[in-house]
Image (spheres, rainbow, N blue to C red):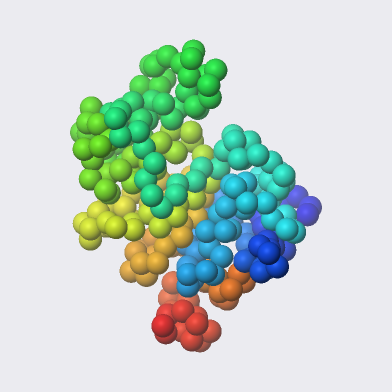
Length: 247
């Protein structure tokens, strides 16, 4: 692939498991600052796409270019250092540590073994913690241990832990799963807020939530792109109605 202006350029991406093509010939392009939501039925290949972008799964064929750098073949930690952060569906925080400590440990120099041994909380770290805590709406919970946060707050804290690394691309897998309606509203506002200046890919099943946040929606079905466009365009698309929204 030649140089491209896209932040993320995926071309002809395919992965097979025991002969079954979970993703086949996928082409997906993401602009800097774009908020893309990927939807589709269970088994459509949504999470598998994120797995390949972050290096957890190696594709059978195809290319994943991030800032004109090929990601296929890189290790997961190298992809993180390149500027990509991923949040899984289940929150992964240190429940015995406070919100502040969770954020401090997520500062880039604190995440490696050698880095953590020499890590000190500097004014720079404190400033970053304060900024991120404000972004995720947990400024008043900084001294509360993770175990005592609500489900929604744990999700926001994990997003904050990724923001501490200042990624250029943030990938969120079903960020509102299990949340109450008020928490979903706050999460929509949070995602829109943190999308300024960075690209975000979201996998989600809640269509009302998708309509509130997405710049563009990609519909996957059987490992292939069925349709792309705004949420309004997707809702009118005959193939989408037949395959997904009509179920």
